[in-house]
Length: 337
Image 1 (tube, rainbow, N blue to C red):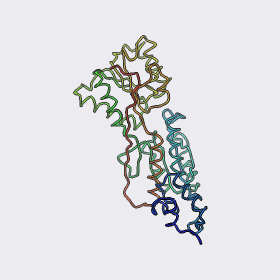
Image 2: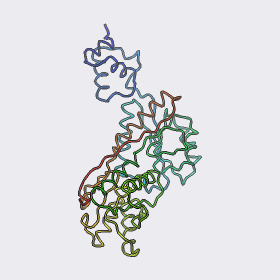
Image 3: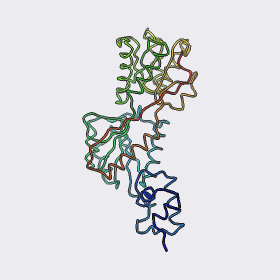
Image 4: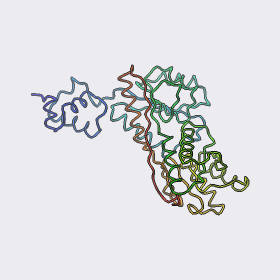
């Protein structure tokens, strides 16, 4: 006699609801528990045919990586971990993951037609470099949609992104609480939504401490190690700039490039100038000194975006929500106390 779902739950010491969610291919169950239930179901003769094969994919999630100029969305550890989280989330939810690239400098309509020819149940749009005027192209595909790593007030869609204001505020506040009141800002020279929000957090911290926001310590740098290094070196050698006691940088790559330029010009870090970055990329541990930064839970953010998309696929009529993932400080050696 075949075992029932209730009996299977008792044998595994799991709730009947958990077993039911696995057998009915519902999201929200860990891969470990899912495999445990399915293996036991086969072992004890549970009739999986009446539920369909739980291991069969429910369809596909299409991840579209939008690139405007590729200055920020590159093959870095940040986006690799983000994609790993997305892939894991799709596996746990029972969806195949398809990945496409969308280039703003190529034929937009042709790329959209190519996407429309694909078969997928939901669209996950990595919008780090996305410009809002391009958004309607993706909305025209008429599938459930979640935008990852950016947000526009005007757009009516689900979004999952970093709490950039909070992260930049905490970073700047940390420098000030360390006794460094002349806090500068190494700002990206590329207009990215995340960086604009980090600017808000930086200036919010200055206002909180009643520090004037009009000062000569804001320098716009290319958001890459080599680009930031060359830009900062030029400013130090040719620009006759005033330097701050400490700098908050829009990302770790900018901080790393700027630190190299300051060292070459005879500055000691952190004795002369302190630095704090954003993202917690592997380069932080290899800098001299190692870089204090704001850690972003990249894999978790990717999984969370998939969970929201899976929910959106099941509940298409619900109002969209904005989910912001908090950051936390990773102290290393680049800030003078």
